[in-house]
Image (tube, rainbow, N blue to C red; front, top):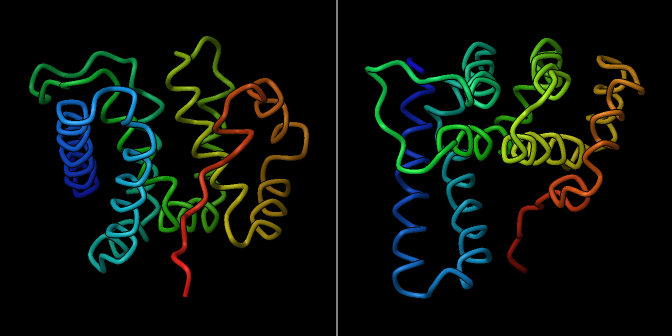
Amino acid sequence: MSGLHHEYVRRVVETLANFEDELIATAGFFAREEHFESCMQGVRTEFEADRRAIAIFAVPGSVSALIDTLSNAEMPAPPSAPKERRRFENAFAATVLLSSSTGVRGIMRNPPLLEQLWEFVERPAQHPVLLHYWARCAGTLLASPDRTDGLKRAIAVLGLRRLLVPLVRLIDCEAVRTPPTPQVPPS
């Protein structure tokens, strides 16, 4: 993993891993999920407001690199790569960024990126954790605020059967059943 997208992935990894470590140390393991989701939403919100990030991820190659980070997470890292504190932390960080409005817009504006995302789930034998991460991206993509346009575009690019087969296979995955929705504070 190299390039400017790498800088964002590493920053998300560091932010979320440090937050989770602190949360577990202070509140215990069972209190972490709700707080962690809130932290991820904060990371997404900051990312979506960062003009530099918007410019970097307006380039299809940067979004493609995020999809590659998820898709190739099981491949051995090169010896020069930083050691992961947690397994698949880079893939998780890429998922957080891909499920942001910036990531969703990038995928929807570039049909080859949608193809690339679906190619991952069409390969045989993915790790269950990575399938969950993929489902989170797909669920967010299909449940985005412009859902009708997103769904129409996904069907136009992938075809209905290709779109639905992986989703049906993963119907028991909470990320497909109930995609994360941003919490909008009351006005």
